[in-house]
Image 1 (cartoon, rainbow, N blue to C red):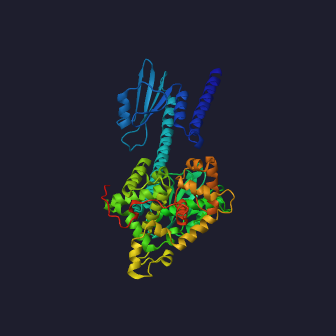
Image 2 (cartoon, rainbow, N blue to C red):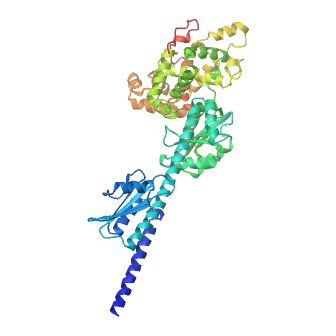
Length: 529
């Protein structure tokens, strides 16, 4: 009787133990318990021994390093044998292959214990190896999915970078492989969605969903909280506004319709619109087309002046010239660091390219009036390449205000000899400039004086403060106060700032910069680029 009771008791204890380890093993498959290192540690404790796992390259993945027969380990890893066992005076060792049957190499699970492996410990080892295979497959799938998403994200960024440097042919070719028809358009809008940097990945996925493949969605390489979208059609814009409504704290800025070649300009417009979105109740704004100073200049004279100013770059190979011009446009719109991130190059590369353009044009980009003037020429060149101005000069308001078209060939000759001062002297441009800067007159702090000295100091608050005999912080506060009045971003470099600089030049508040090639009678100097 006693023996039978004892035997029954041992059986119940064995059943309880079996069900306990099986349940514990299953717990490792739960979403919150999928940890390979913890599972290997559990295996060693459960069999009263030590366990370790090596991957297909022989690298230790989990558990302590153990003295193993390297020949046996190599045979199991390459698939010559599926398992092996060994014993010596120190104990017993089991080796099992862990991985897919197909690969040429797999991981090896090793377990050592002082006592021989009985049926129970063998079952635990076998079932644990199966669970490890499942966890490894899940990890590989997750890693592959992560790599695919990263590669797709990198490809989207590469397409955006090609658009930023106006290589629309290459951008379409790259996009056609994965997103057929995405860039089969002449015009598009650029939107910038701003939110919490920690939420950007989720917001980017939402953008992909609401645009339904009709937009190029890119995580901005320069601003951690920004998602950039190149959107085809108007429906996606409305969908993005609904996304802003569902996500408190987000802002949306959009550009006007632009050709794909003007993606960089559209991006600048979208960023500018973000400043307006911050003060709007719906937290969204689209760039409002306004009168730009170049549209108030005589178009024929402006084209001739632009061609003359940029002529030193015409001697360069086509790809080199395009690279320098695209980099300089972005470098004038944004900081060198931001431009570098958008282009996918180093900031030293951006600076080197811009310095080369400086040398070719014999100018100094630390002077804000020079930057504004060169930006004017580059913008005009892009508009011409984009077909926005006809050969007869129509399409800009300056054609009505200047001398073009009034006096036949003599007027055309005067236009082709126009200097920067002539371009800035038109009555329409002067009226625009006086109205713009006149908005500041009602402020008792004399914001116009501060702004004028700040521009003259190259946008440097410290140097302007020394000239004005005030604190640098006062200068910064005055410039910030100017921004909402003029509805333009000034502290960040870009089109808004350069328009205000041109307004100062047009009113005579600042002297035009001295440009070596501004004299139409000057012979072309040899160019070494």
